[in-house]
Length: 434
Image 1 (tube, rainbow, N blue to C red):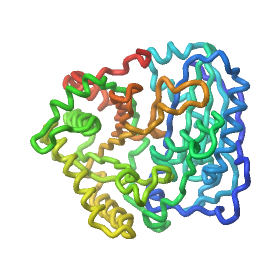
Image 2 (cartoon, rainbow, N blue to C red):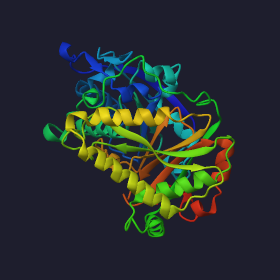
Image 3 (tube, rainbow, N blue to C red):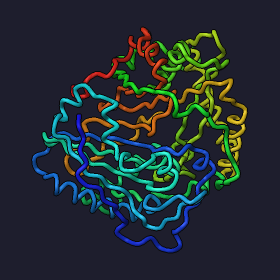
């Protein structure tokens, strides 16, 4: 697939940001995250009614209007604050003439997928994610009439739920929706977690981004997910969720995968969206990194993982978090959770611990993102540049299955993708078009 850039434009908010909103304080969680982008790809099949020029104009106009609501995304990060100066977001138009979208979706090439992101329009993605541009969009038009929209928002101010809220609002504004249909976001993450402090630094993995990693897609069809949930059923957990079951299986496979490191312990890091856990304090529309990140499972060298035990432990950690939230004074919850996270991470060393992260995007309404030409046929979420030892879980289009996008060092992936237990439940990169 050859992607050719047609045009690049800076889109500014349609209204100037008021002076009293010109500075946004980052939270401690925003600050400690590495300078990467949260990214989403949305694919739409042929629609003869809309021309490429008309579509591009419509997307840019509505993006400009949306940036008035999401004004920090048009700003620039300056240390531990965002200067909401309306500098603008990057919009790239591109086209593919040598590959119909249906061909690409029949056998998705995850390396070629990266060409549908606008990151080639910045010199260095790590530097850009830490300063500007904070939002980049790429609309790629296929000769057959299909299109792909790639969205990148710096992870410094956007987790998966944030990018979903942005896409939901932008698509509603493109359709001409008004009023309650258009979400009014809240930028108040630093009112929950303590404000960022430039002096604070976490240990850094010196090898991060330097290994040759590869991402593979594993699809758990609805019927296979049900089989896995039955297998994962533990005495303490009568009905494991889709995410608990898939996470437990992936963890078992991570542990049994041949690894090139000499670390004593493998550790599973799980990210939890706190919005649904503290709805009285955290609206769904809050933008920022409103997550709790913790080491939920740990295992020493030579030990084996049982799926039922893993599910039981995952459920216990989720209940511990719920109990912690319920027992704490509302005004202190954020500080308590931040201290707990930072204490746990400071105890880990990249010399002795090999972390694996599972992040679930399931139940985010990304398949509802219609810009006026129908809902997407496929949605992909990840981070860019890619991180090693990371699994992103997405809903399948039917809302029942799960797609896992797993990134591992190249030499570890060859062992992981051949795991017979994994392949008993998941298909490796099947066609998107059923």
